[in-house]
Image (cartoon, rainbow, N blue to C red; front, side):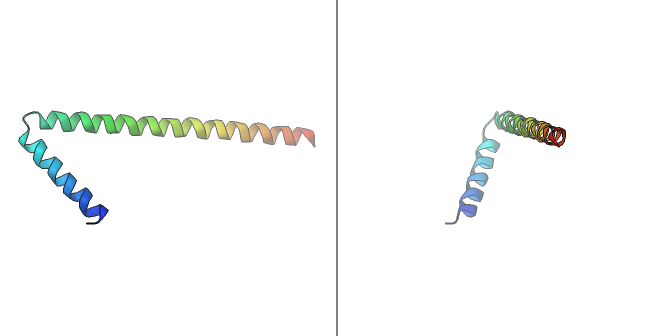
Length: 68
């Protein structure tokens, strides 16, 4: 069984369980909200790291230009 078929089987089983569970929709909504929050945090961290890298690169360029 390949990884993709295992993943698909797991997704189908999860959908069936959520459909049968009385609070399945709320559980799915919470899981989706958590995933969205996690992705937003990762993007924000990436933006902060990129800003810091850009600031450092500009400071290095200014120092080298001043040294000339």
